[in-house]
Image (cartoon, rainbow, N blue to C red; front, side, top):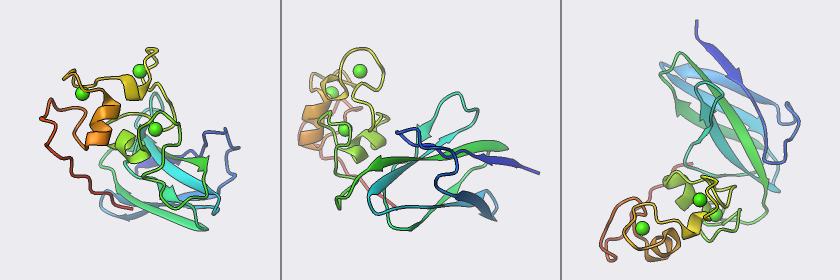
Length: 164
Ligand SMILES: [Ca+2]
Ligand SMILES: [Ca+2]
Ligand SMILES: [Ca+2]
């Protein structure tokens, strides 16, 4: 029997249970997370294997009322939580919630925290970091559409596919 524990939290430290959430198994290693949303919030979904650190799934969910997210996990034990952020716009992927110059989805795709201007807490803001040390700062790579983790030529465009 697999142990599945769902924790629900938000950037604003919303009380546990404020968004009634459940996980149901859909099949082999496949699950559905659902929770009650509102139209004035966007949602990030995070996972952890040990509660020691949380990783983002690469999407931002626009709040409606009933939210669903399907995912796979082959781990014996895992944790999933929903993080909410006040938002009434229509492009949660393209928005820049933490205001560091990098869009939410760009940060999610490259392992940065879209809700923290300095993901690694080294005093250098995410946009001013140069992840691949190729001389082009992350903000420049974002604007050029290049991959901030590959020392790529400026005219190599990044292709991003987002599922929701
Ligand atoms: Ca950002
Ligand atoms: Ca930093
Ligand atoms: Ca770079």
